[in-house]
Image (cartoon, rainbow, N blue to C red; front, top):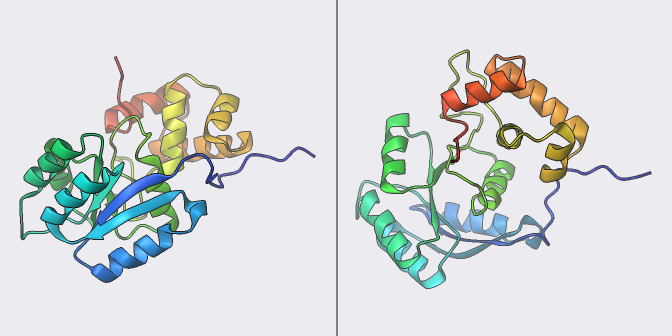
Length: 222
């Protein structure tokens, strides 16, 4: 019997390099330890505290991802992000915080922050998000159980995998092609489609794409 593709991460595909800067040393060390097993495909190169260390560690390690907790003390976020990108232009900066307001997130994005990851996210969701950052085509606010993105038709939100399916669908791919691209079963794609249709309040692909564009979940590329 031919094995069906699954959602299990293949550690041979890629190892994402990251630097973690957080005010809680205990949290930072715990997260670094959680990322350590090679099957997770994440290498935490260094951990630190505060904006100055974020800049220094990014300059030294040139990480693909910088996870940073925003704080009121120390250098302002816009200067931190600017300095990080000066020394490590390809590093994508991700805010690691609880539940900032949408206005705060939009301001952070204007500064050059790539995305936001809630500390209330599950460990599995956190690891998955970090792995996806370097190769994602665009910045987006990650969706979690306490989501920052609320759909106007209700509190339901799209999961990370549902967003992946929506993006693949925007490229005109069939269910089979989406399954191949995401290394999941075709039946799993159909389940994700049914869920995202329900959450978006639509019944067709074209309406789902229109709704996704309207909500900012998709971005047109020209």
